Each structure stands twice: as C-alpha cells, then as structure tokens.
Image (cartoon, rainbow, N blue to C red; front, top):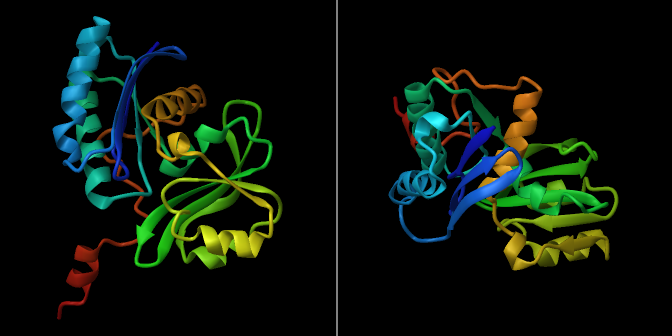
Length: 230
C-alpha cells in the first residue's frame, strides 16, 4: 500500500511517501515560509522521484490538530483536493500523537507539548501500548502548563517546542521525574503521520473527505473578535 502523508500543523511542515511501512521519500521543512510554498511542490517532486503517479497513492494521511489555524487549513485543503481528485481514503492523525511517535520506544509516560501561545500549551499524555499505537493517559487539551504538569504521576518524557519555555517549571514540579527529547526529536515527522495513519486505516478510522475539519481545541483570534462584535 502506498501512503502519502502531509503535516502542516505547526511551524514545521513535512511530506512523506511510504510503501507499506517503508519510507520511500520524506521532506521536512523548518523555514520561515508559508507551508503552501513547500508542501505541494514536495508532494509532486516526491511522487516523481519514486516513479509513482498520484493515482498510485492508496491512502492519504494528515495531522488534523491541534496546531496553527492557518497551517491546519492548508493541510486540510491540500489533502481534500488530492483525495477528491483520486477518490482515495483519508485518515486523520492527532498532531500530538504524531509527535509522541518520536519516543515510541520510551517505557515512561510520553508528553508531547506544543506552544499554543498566550502562555498556554497544547499537551497530552500517552503510553505506548506495544501495538503500534498509544493508550491515552490524559486527553489532549489547550492548557496552562503548570496545571497540566501538576496532574502527571510518574516518570515522563517531554517532546515538542512547548516545553522549552517551561523547562524550569517542569523540573521544579516533577523533581527528577522528567526527561527531555534531543533536538532531532522535537518536531513532527510526516513519516510518523503515515505510520500512524496506516494503523488507523486498518481499524477503519477514516475521515469523510467532504466534511472533515481540523481539530483546533480553541477558537481563533478572528472568531473571538467576530463573536465580540455587536
């Protein structure tokens, strides 16, 4: 099975092309450019290098949130366009779960944490279940970091751009129970999105291509301003 995965949920972006569980092509971008400038060209180039036409893709996978409102919309519109053109299924993967996959072999609790701005983080708590997926220990949410940290019981491994600003608080509150991922594991990888997507597809967890929307966890600034108008 050929899987094409796209991640545009955060400041980074990625595209991966897999045959079953083998990564054929992967692009990762951490650049100060709009994701629309990198992702679709990477899709076309990756398919060309692999000698696969868009019609040869069997499954599309993408990060559906939480994350950047603009980034998530770019990913959703890109995948919808490709899926509607080809008629192939789409699977959505949590951004935090995809990030946690970087520490899948970790025996401790895994806490992916993304910067949500305004002093908040997007965070969740997982434990690898040995079947290629995670058991959810704490559901993903937009939260004040101290409130989330105080609810953690046990040793925990942190990943993501959300823990850097709060590393001192984490160390203080968890008293030696916290470990932190190295720089190469701080970002979502599109290959992780693909691998998790294949697992979700095997369980029949597909999205309705026409109606699915990103999972934002909170309202955008534009929505808040609009709601405040008389």
